[in-house]
Picture 1 (cartoon, rainbow, N blue to C red):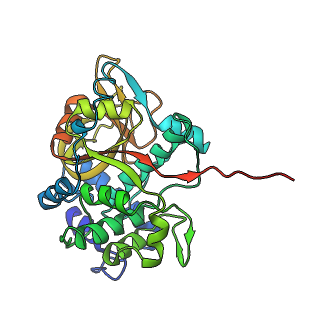
Picture 2 (picture 1 turned 60 degrees about the horizontal axis):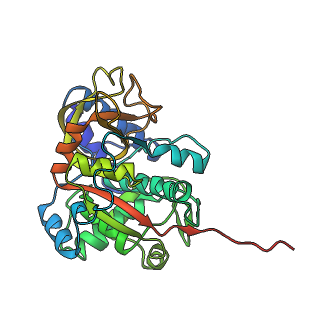
Length: 343
């Protein structure tokens, strides 16, 4: 069995889709990461879960009165020029722990990028904007995955996916129209720990009806298409994480260079999160958070970047945004602070 076939089968393993290769439930993520790491080192094509959909893009644009960042960014336009901004320190300050990368077990990278983006946005709202919110738990990516694929793509947009994965438009639409659930228990559902099998199950059936009202209490208010590095830079500088969905790959064989960067190369159908920018240097670029665990890449670092992350040149991120499925998020209706009377 060659590596491409192994990768294909590992995506199908579990939830009744095994094709002769049985992976233990708790090893799905490790097996997935091990294989994509090998493929990346060999500059092979990787399908990590982003599915390009021009149909869904067209529907998203028509469904939103102002779908593009350049229709909304008058107040922030150009504010990040020549500046430096890092968003993960807000997450670490609010949670009291270092940011650990997600580790996807199936082709659900889009939901991981959106989930982590919401976590960081929550922390920014609490720590930077003094929002009357409290930190409760991380976002449940399985809910974003199932809701985007079924409630939005199938039921609202009329498109059905044949295998794992989805585009970014439906994830953005879901968190706006339906909202977010956290990593905790809801009725008969336990989202405390990420489970790729649960993600795949919800990716077939959608969100249980009983959970939808709970989800809708916590929507994202603002999601707009970012089409360039300049727009992405200004968003991150102002505290808005940007989900990058594209087929841009990177060369990983020698690891990150001494400055923490990876060079572009190969094809990754993938979604990742832009959570830092730096133009106050000789090499403008952004810090990208991946969902392949902490050991898929090593090498140099910059500005205490999180494990499992890398920096990419501004020109590369500009190309990723130009593919048309990169979205900035803001205005999360999180969880209000609790006021207690002490007697």
